[in-house]
Amino acid sequence: MHNVFYINVDPVIFHLGPVSIGWYGLMVALAVVFLVAWLYRNNNREHVLSNDSLITAALIGIVSGLIFTKLLHVIDLWDYYIQHPGDIFSGNGLTIWGAVLGATLGIWAYSRITKQFSFARFGDMIAPGTMVAQAIGRVGCTLNGCCYGIESDSACAIVYNNPHSNAPLGIPVLPTQVFEIAFDLCVFVVLMLLRGKLKPSGALFTVYFFLYGLWRFCIEFIRDGTPFLLGMHQAQLIGLILMLITLPIIIIKVRWKN
Image 1 (cartoon, rainbow, N blue to C red):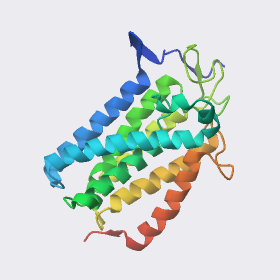
Image 2: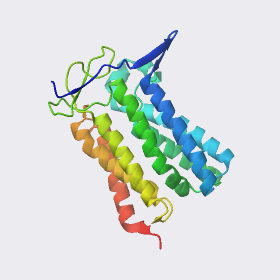
Image 3: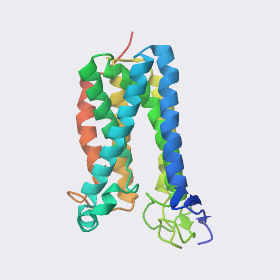
Image 4: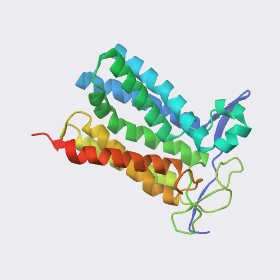
């Protein structure tokens, strides 16, 4: 295994009494802070909603994202959680799809109820920043040892050596977390290039969902996981469904601005 890259990082940074502060939690928190800062900065330029509504939308998105991300994880591993119901309320099992879909549904409902801003414009504003936030979160996955790929003897494989890692120890696996970091940043560039060039409002957000859905459908073939339905991982199935929803919308509705 002389061609592989070794990771010996402890997922836990330090302890505060019974509380453990880990790389994964830190990176997720940084991702949320970045996304809120992105919204605040771009909203000052685009004036999609008031600052008070922005704060409320951010709080609703965080709460609904947390609820939905846990819900998807419990559904995915129902056999485990039915035996360990107390773990439902743990901080483990946060999924990107759950966070994205939960936050989207929560903020969409808030926009519909209050009628204070256009959710389509909000989605276009947040889409590029979301890709960077996801990349930051995947840094936490890389250090934590979760979301790793299948076993591989390729030159790009990585081996986790720290006994507290969530990855299998001493076994070369594909660094699918790193692959996604690179993909997220590439899509960020694409979305920034497309920003302001597509119509109608919401088109950029739709493109984001299609591209990330396509990515998750493909990457899950080389990522460790358990079949959820039709032989696919849960994230893979969600990606496929979103592709089937967004692609017709892009083909029929999305146009270049004059």
